[in-house]
Length: 157
Image 1 (cartoon, rainbow, N blue to C red):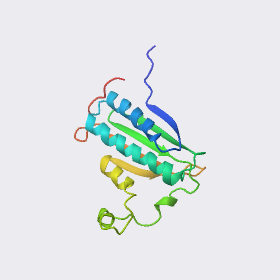
Image 2 (spheres, rainbow, N blue to C red):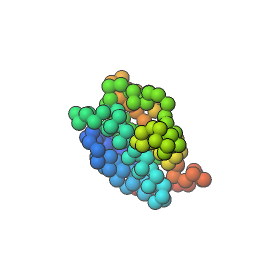
Image 3 (cartoon, rainbow, N blue to C red):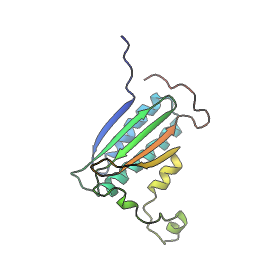
Image 4 (cartoon, rainbow, N blue to C red):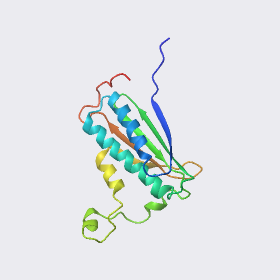
């Protein structure tokens, strides 16, 4: 009997900066096997790394007792990632308007804090999802293997 390939990979990371690299490496391995080109893989890695850093710093507020969950799933034409923190107040770090790049360059806003903007430029779709009953923030992103033609078959794992 032929066994189906798994279509989801889940990671549970310590809430410590640097561990987001495990998610980035796992994602690169998976995306290469799905037929993503090197430039697209680099974009996805950067977006997932930024989302994990946001979860560590903002959602979990650096609390090393908390964890960051990362789940990758894929279909024939796209790859999804969901990053979940264990923060007590979901979306609390999103209060207020996001400063523009121009405001940051002019010194009118902190230099940090462009992760969500960067992610939005690197992926095809991204959104905050409703929180689980325990709280925390769930952030989803999707990338299509090929932005022009989304119907090509992925390579076998």
